[in-house]
Image (cartoon, rainbow, N blue to C red; front, side):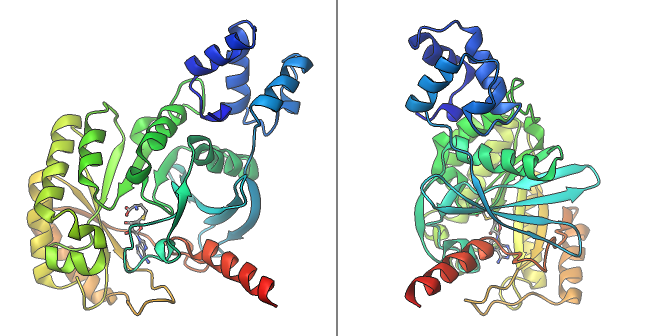
Length: 348
Ligand code: SAH
């Protein structure tokens, strides 16, 4: 296993196998997860011989920054990183009044096939390791020189399709010996993988679970999200109420408003009926049109009518501020542009 994905306990065992004292594990952990060292060379309080042995056995790879775009509108920054094997992932840094938030990817590509999403167009390549999810945050902290208080797993990939690595990532991210980010400030977004949602409910975490709902009937949901053919709304809602019952944490329902598809007053009524018993918070997102599809945003007035209907029904609702519209805003667009530019470069 890669060393930056190890818990402190596992690191202690690894260090013991090397014939070293347990306190060396604490030092190593501190360098990797608090001081955010990129290589062993920086770990100056460890004996040089140990550093050499470790780097031969457990290579420490940092993500390589390939591109960064900064929004002229709101300061949002998009980062494109290369992983050790050359695969590309993107992450987003957003500045809010209450602190800085990072949105990370959990997989290289995605196999879920949501119709409006750019991340899934080239299919799925592989899962990210815990260290690669952490690495996106660590690299952004180094690049911006600022603290991060919130983490959302809403970039490319389906986090619950990479369950074990996601859990380990959350434990390391919120560990008091690392960045020590509060679990309450961590949000995981899923397209609705029912068995994993229930499993997550039993983990005793206090993170927020967001469900990408996007439609309030099975018929409409199936049109937008292939996963709805595997799990019907009844099953997904049952998993949500299990999550709420087990954790006491209110869920967020994400709802991308697509003009002429899911934005009628009747849709808002059905959505209210789903959210009400769960006390779920609804986050309305004007769909971010991607070049490859013809979906368009609902008009401003339509969005207001939709929101008012929810509010009248006593639902807690916000309209997602569109951050970084001027910088390949939608999930997966920056990565896709780079991949196709590389391809074009090769064929020239
Ligand atoms: N796979 C997870 C997390 C990644 S997607 C999930 O489905 O939740 C993060 C969020 O962005 C999801 O709600 C997704 O549906 C939404 N999304 C993807 N493409 C979008 C687009 N073009 N416009 C608006 N929201 C989009």
